[in-house]
Image (tube, rainbow, N blue to C red; front, side):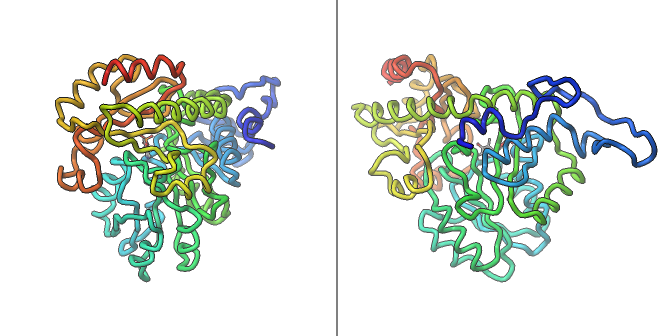
Length: 378
Ligand SMILES: *Cc1c(COP(=O)(O)O)cnc(C)c1O
């Protein structure tokens, strides 16, 4: 089955009791048993819910995986992955990382005796230098946020296999439309479903996908034991969003390319970060592991003063200033004062994250309007 067909059909069956084509919202906490322990596979909705089961199957199929698990947020999904570890275990993570993941690792799990290394992985061989007998997980985010660095997933997976370490990939920016990390050797794929998969800026949710049965058993035990599950209404909204994932992504990519190319030749812009440019340092890896390059773009301006960035952000009409990404509407953000404000300025600027850096999540509006908006704002 090709991707668009999967997006529409995978994991969902007409409702067995009525034939309803759309999976109903099973808004129920419990299920009646005819005799103690005699039930139809559903006992309590933290453990199983039919609307959530349909969504879990759908996301698993999109990622070419065997098992899917959904959570109340992307961070709740990451939370159970780290809860498989024990005090003394070590995690090697990308340094250019979603701020909330960094906060969860350092402000929560570091207190429980888990050690995190944040390293540059643009050359995956760098990972090997940090592996020791306590290493149990490699955490990769590609493309990264907001610098759009690309990490070689197949290369990272070879190193993970060699040392019997798990490899998890945060696939939020790419979605399975662009990249399927399990096919490249990753053990776990993680999503903030909140972003492109749900796609309409109306749900907060997370997901994990894996092939290995034992890994699935451990993670689904934690899903039930810790309890960070999504409700059936949200699962329904995401099932609905997924039906247009391929069409939305196609347009995000088309618009992303045009906006990136327009920014690149704009006299007020100094640098554009987008993996589709041949000049991007890891363009060849992006080309190898991604089917297209997506709608996430960052750029800096020749006038690098904070006031200039603020004035441009205030002038945008269609690119609305907000946290988040991946919805149908275009968004803009200012990492230095929003998502990455907690990182000291010198550290930020070492990584290229200047005061004038603006991050765009290019939506699926008509691109002529988006380009006109950029021009008037700049
Ligand atoms: C938003 C995001 C998360 C966290 O997901 P929530 O759904 O907000 O909890 C994790 N990783 C990336 C790359 C994200 O963009």
